[in-house]
Image (tube, rainbow, N blue to C red; front, side, top):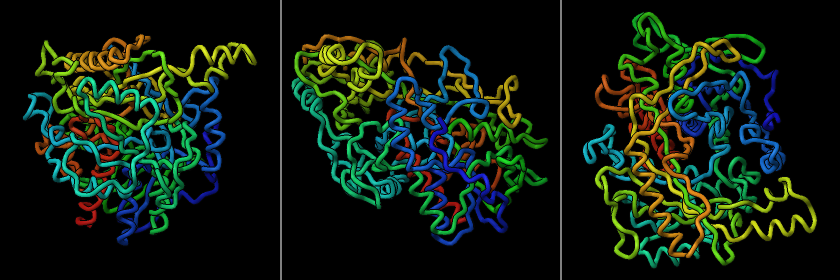
Amino acid sequence: MSGGRRSNDRADRTPIEDADVCIVGAGPAGALIAHRLAAVGHEVVVLEAGPRFDPEARIEQMEDALRPAHGRPDVWGMGGERDAYTSSGDRHYPLNHTRVKGVGGSTLHWQGMVMRLHERDFAVASQDGVAADWPIEYDDLRPYYAEAETALGIAGASDNPFEPPREQPHPMAAFEPSHSDSIFAEACEALGITTHSVPNARNSEPYDDRSACVGYGTCQPVCPSGAKYDATSHVEKAEAAGARVVDRVPVQRLEHDDAGEAVTAAVYATPDGETYRQEAREFVLAAGGVETPRLLLLSDSPQYPDGLANSSGLVGRYFHEHLFAGTSGVIDRETRQHHVGFNTTESHQFYDEPAAGTGQGIPAAEADADDLGPIKLEFRNYGGPSPVGLALSDGGWGEALRERVADAYGNHLTVGALVEQTPRRENRVALDPSITDDHGNPVPEIHWDLDDRTRRTLRRANAIQEGILEELDAEITWQIGPENTGPAFHHMGTTRMGADPEESVVDGRGRTHDLANLWLAGSSVFPTGGAMNPTLSIAALALRAADHVAEKL
């Protein structure tokens, strides 16, 4: 499967002259920054390693996603020598499972849930004695969160009593709760758990020249209707404002001046085998939490023998994720699973106080109650097998299929959760010189382990989930906890921000401590990740960084 590519091999991929800004990566951070800077008259060029994708091919991609023969990486053309990697540590990290290299980046396949981090997330070290504080506070990002919600187009009810202060309602009305949410609501009310809507970056009504959601239900890995936001929207806006976006030009390394104080060029390869140097006044790396540190490590020099901007030794270090906890069961009533392809109800009640009980059925945590990370509960309306999946898997057709669907579908419930992983120096993105990519560069090596605090938080999430399902007299059928958990594929922390150059890679604005014209954007700058899906924070930080770049220009 080609992933619906529409790249033009004859496109002009030569450098432009007099560029103000060169951005590496056309995902959400790079696209937002490109649009912001181009809109005020700056000469912007964006270099993207992957192809452009044809939006007309998304129906075909959806069909492939539904077929058991196609894995999720196939839908967006991931894999092979270009995307090779290795994994070490106690747990294998399946890097390519939800990665997309191409114009639009990770938003081409994401689930689309968008929440603000809490105030506590910016000061975990001060409050909990773990990890590191951010060099900025929630109030520094608060206006940019509002701008990001408008830019992406967020549907939400602004009804979350646990979220930090906001200045205005969400741009669109929230989606109606799913049928299974009404079942969960009964149990949660009995247990003293407050529920609320989920902010979604998908249109509940026409918005920004995109249609309202029509309910295909394949939000991951592809939205055929375009109702879910993806970064191609801001790529198009940036191009309309004069930016140049060049696809299929993987940057091989960054070059700097003799003093080692400023980047002078991004060296990139083209599909026809040529290599070019794109010069600019300012450079922004927005290539994700894995490729951003990898490019810095590949850009070593006599002044930076351990990698560019790596005087701290922390480029690639403190890789962290969100971990999934889940408990599923069956009940003796209809749940209409898979009726909606995304979450419509959550609870952040156990986010700031994960150890707290409700007094109505969920007891307080007992052991190590003061050493837990935040928990974001998700009431999933797509737990259990889907009727399409049953039909396309082995097991017969006609009457046999009808009986199998009747037996296996329609009464499953799943309570999920994201929990914070404590960032640790040992978890990292490094280079593996034993394996090279299609341009002869060492591939990324992901070293990923779990710590005891994260395991305790996963167990606490499971206990809350069990209480909810037991209230519904559910028969629990499976559980994902500390021993079999997996990542949410949110790559964070590998070039973290901080006030101390010895303990961080970039400052609070996103500019590297070592080079005056090199900026990093994306979740790689997160010192901690909380338990919230990161894209809204990525967008807010990108808009803020764009303002700082504009001030410098």
